[in-house]
Image 1 (cartoon, rainbow, N blue to C red):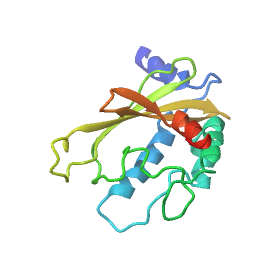
Image 2 (image 1 turned 30 degrees about the vertical axis):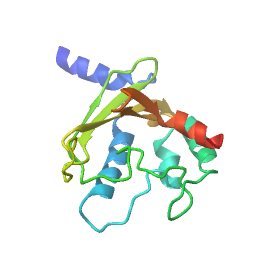
Image 3 (image 1 turned 90 degrees about the vertical axis):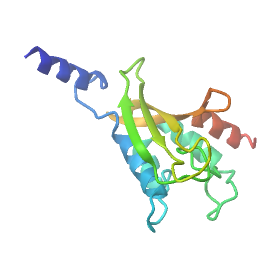
Length: 175
């Protein structure tokens, strides 16, 4: 009985209003699209920032920063993205994603960090081809549902964490 109470309490912990929310749900949707984008198939590219996803997967603040950055599109085929790279794999090239794992940390100050790790270069002969890429999704609750408020990548070269919201703010300033 005590175990059931602990499970229920942990499910309710994310939403302060008493209903369970799957804090990984928006991350799962983004990662499924990213996995499909880099799979060895001929499917169309899925834009993780298309209007329907912006509407339900991301926080209002994230969407505002994205829309401001989108005023300065990068050089790409459709001329609408502010990025000239895949923000999840943190690069322009990748292989089918392998060994993908996802873990959600407890909510702290209204933010849950969902950490995703995967190998993106296993089809390469590069020395770092077997290295893992780590992406942190900061998830908050808005309107009673979990939404992504930031995407933070780990910069292997500088050992720093790079916030996509900070990057979008710089793009919006024309930098």
